Image (cartoon, rainbow, N blue to C red):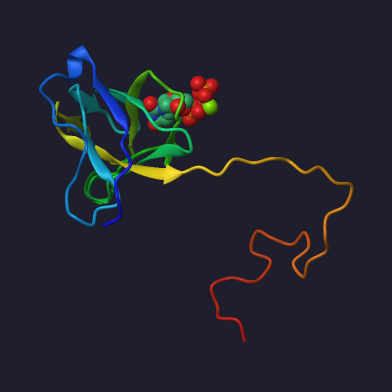
Length: 153
Ligand SMILES: O=c1ccn([C@H]2C[C@H](O)[C@@H](COP(=O)(O)OP(=O)(O)OP(=O)(O)O)O2)c(=O)[nH]1
Ligand SMILES: [Mg+2]
């Protein structure tokens, strides 16, 4: 694997005793992050789940919060803002927004792995405002303009 990037992390008082986010396998793209609180999510409900963690991500990076596919497939638990954006200048508590798309209530216990964190480089925009844009074959066509599921002939 490539070299790791150091990210400062602080445990908040209610995060004491919990595992720090960690890669479950040597090739995992995301670190699983655990809940610092127990939550009962009714069908259709959503909640910003505490992690008991605060971060200082280095400039030039963000952390993306992504759902766990097992929770999604088995229980309908999603991250409604996926991929959640953790800015490098955010010093508040990392929270994981979960939604229950399933038909049954879902119980999260403190210490359960609820989502995964992916560190990603950020390339920032410098607008170059112009009067006219260059022409392309696609032009303004989009949103299915090239056809449906059938192969191109
Ligand atoms: O799933 C998430 C998404 C965001 N955040 C925190 C970190 C992020 O840096 C901050 C702001 O997030 P975002 O920019 O997505 O939310 P916003 O609605 O635009 O709020 P703001 O006006 O504070 O930027 O909230 C989380 O803890 N968890
Ligand atoms: Mg914002």
